[in-house]
Amino acid sequence: MSVRIVHGANEGRFEFVGQTVNQARRVLKDAFNIPDDAEALVDGREVDEDYMIRNGETLEFVRTLGHKGGLHDFWSMREVAELLGVDAIQVMSELGINPISQSVFTSEQIGKYISTIKSKNNSTQSLSNLIVDFSSMTLKCGKQGPFEIDNSVIFRLLNRLNARPCHYVHLDNLKRDVWKDEFIDDDTVHRTARRLRKRLEEMKLEGVDIKTSNGSWALLINKSPA
Figure 1: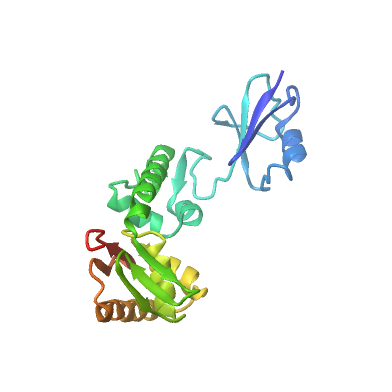
Figure 2: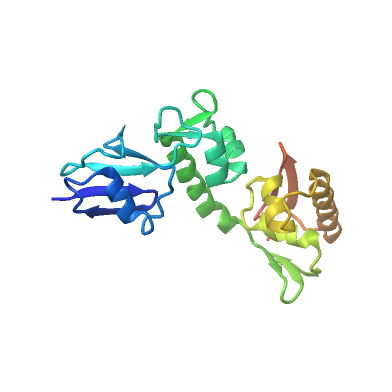
């Protein structure tokens, strides 16, 4: 006789039949990294710590930050931003995935977003024939180049955008990944991106451009001029 225990990506079957939720929590707290404020759900319904677990049931520990009524099938915007990135909400909107009410997403919507992003990653990664090589300080794009570059912030920005071409990356993510400083002002990012665009124009790189939309920047690559 066993019960299924779940917390995030951690999952397993254990012989906790006849024991309380609190006992299971204490035993698996460290192994499953269960936070103190996680609520317990048995087969999708909220239960108390003294609930006696029965054979075949599924006990799931969930964070309820931003949730109403402890419904783990719903995600607040804050949780989406924390777990999937600040730009996820904007990308979801562009994909037509909008909150159902009061800035709340369903688990089905989150799953759709993740599946779409994975699919886009598989297709867009092959589109980038741009190579930013900091070891040789050169840049190539298909048969174009090599062009000399330096380790300045504009090429670090280019390298970051090239990691996911054709995908708009929010300013907050660029601050964190390129500048390692989330407190720099937005204008600094915009100015650097415009300098990068000018530098790419000076190189006369065909089929390569960067554009901005709604507080995000993207590297757009047309593979045909290779």
